[in-house]
Image (cartoon, rainbow, N blue to C red; front, side, top):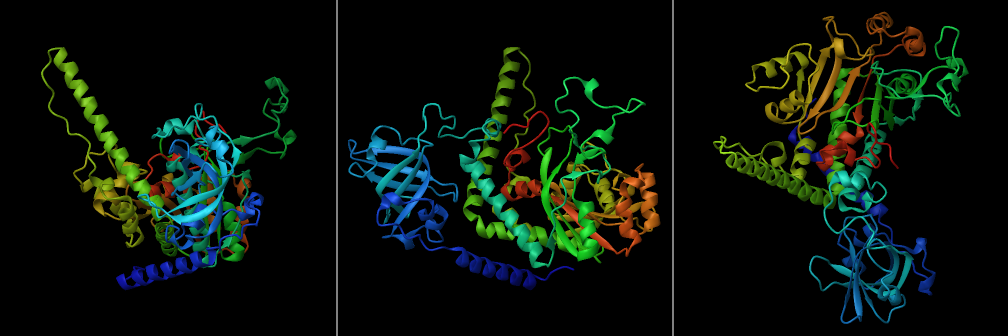
Length: 559
C-alpha cells in the first residue's frame, strides 16, 4: 500500500519526536568528580559524545570534567610553557582540544615525550570557551595522567590518509582512523534501529543456531566443522567406514555439521508458533569470491512473518529500509557529513588517476612514433554518485518503492538500448549490472522485483500457479543492486516434497521442516538482508570489507 506525502511527513515527524525523546532520556548528567582529582577513574569519565552533546559542549562551559582517550596530536608552545593536546575517545567524530600549562601535574609526561600520538591519557580540567576556530570549547587541564605510552616513531598510522588495503592489514589499529570509526558508529546505529523497528512491530528476537546440519540455500557452499582432525598428523588417522567413506558417527555430532548460511529455516519454527520473529546474527559461506560484495563471514537479518503473504512481506521489508535510514540520518549526521566528503575525494582521486594513466599512454605512443589515439572520455562524478550521500539516503527514506514482476523487468531490459555485458533473457538470474540499471536509471528509486523463475530459486519458495515462477522478491537499491531477498514460503506439503525432489535434496534432512506443514501449516513469508550491504549503502563505501570489524574472505582470517 503506497503512502501519501502527508503520511510520509507525519511518519518522519513522529520518528524525529521519538529520537528527540530518546536523546533526552539517554543524556546523562556529568559525573561528580571526587575532591581529590587524582582519584578519578572510569566511573568519573565523561565520554566525548556526552560532552559535545547537541550544542558542541557550550552548555558545559565552566564545569569540571574528567575525559580519557587517545592522543591525536601534541603541540608544545611558548618555549615549553604550555601545550595543545588533541584527543579522541572514539565515541564521536569530534576531537577535544586540551590546553595544559607547564605548572600542571603531569606536565613532565609531555616534556619527556611520554604523551605522544596514540598514547592513552586521563585528563581532568575545566571546560572553557575556545578562542580557536572550528571548535566551541576546549579543556583547561588541571591534571594529566598518562595511562599507556606509545612509540610515535614506530606507530604505523601517520597523520595522513591511508589506503583501505593498508588499513586491512592493521585490523587492530584501523578503528582509530576517522574512516573506520565513522563507519562503525553508523553500523552501530543501524543495528540499534533494526531492533527498534522489529520490536516496535511486535516481533520477537530469536537466536538461531550457528552450527547446523541443514543447507538452507541448497548451494552446498558451506564450511564444514569437525573434531576428527584434532591431533591427527596424517589423513590415515581420520576414521573411515568399511567402504572407505569418512565415518561421521565418530565425529562430535555423530553426523556431518556445518556453519550456517542462514537462520531462516530455524526462524520459521518460531514464526509457526509465535507469529512474527526475526534473527540477527553471523552467517557463513564458503564461496571462493574476491569481489567487493562478498565475505565469508557476514551478518544477516531475517524476519519471518506468520499469516503474511508476499505483498505484506514487501511492506515490512520496505518499511525496514526506510526506518533504518531515517534513524541513521538523525543520529549520525556528523559521520555522514564526513563520509560524504571522503566519498567525493575518492571519486576525484579516481578521476585524476585515470587522467594520469591516459597522459602516460599518449606519451608512450608519441615516443614510439604512433598516431595519437582518439581521446577517451574520462570517468566523471555524474550518475548515482553525483548526488551527495545524505541526499541519496533521504530520497530512499522518503520514496515509495517501485514494484515490477520479473517478467516485466526482463522486457524493460530487452527494450533498452543498453549493451549489457550479459544479455538479459527470461530465465536469467539477473546480475548486478541489470539490477543497478533498473533501480538507478529506469525507475530512479528502490525497486521490488517479484515472481522469479523457480529454476534458480530456493526449494522453500512458494510455487505460483503458472508452474514456472515462485513468489520470491528482491529489493534493488541504486548504487548497490540487491539489498534484500525474500519470498512467501511454501506451506503445501505435496508441493514442497516435489520441490525437494527437483532440487535433489534428501527429504530426511528436512523432516522437521516438513512437520511444520504437517501440524498446522500456515501461510507465512520472510526475507533476508545482508547487514553489511546495508552499511555499505548508508555510508557510501564500495567495498564490503571496510564495513565489518574483521573481514573474512578467501585466504584472509587474521585477527
